[in-house]
Length: 297
Image (cartoon, rainbow, N blue to C red; front, side, top):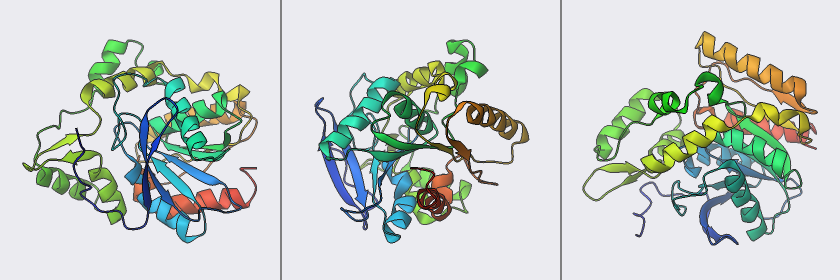
């Protein structure tokens, strides 16, 4: 089935659908100079999200002379949607194959939420490809600690059934809920959905595939990996104002920093979970600062 045309045109990125050695095709958005002395920032979205959530960050990076590649992971956005391969080993292998296809040896892996856990996993499993890992309000997620039983986790964390909702209603809700976001963030959020000719929407990530990934996230234990990760890790967590949740994040991140050979945390206070969409310029500036001060070396 052919995907519907891009509802929100992309004006400042080079779009490409990259075929991997496995046969999978991933949609990518390229910004910034094709050749540069600085490394590539590989921008990885969260669960049920898409590459366009990084539009604002990618644009700022490009304006300041840095190259970035945002990717729709398997099952998401405009990439291929197989019924399997949603475990962390396979998803990180996809990213390494993507770098191979683009003739890029190494990159700074930046990932939000589930994507944060992905970049930690990549730094652990593929240190030869990862210059540094930057989990954005993620990288420490261990759902199994909060939900010892998968059935309880599945019931509490399953996504809402939004397929069939009117697109206009969805857009109104997103704009009302995120009134302080720049337009790039609003468009990024809307791009999590396919807009149909009849005016309805459906998530690009199907419910069944969402649940497959959720179970993998429930089983994932990044805390077991930190002590053996050699690459620098920069956490960029969000303080949403929820005191208990922020305290839990602080505990998890401080424990990670105690194990990592090279780790830092740069908090965004206050900020939404999707801080890369809410504060793209600040997010990009933190990435550039840590590149220039040598932390990613």
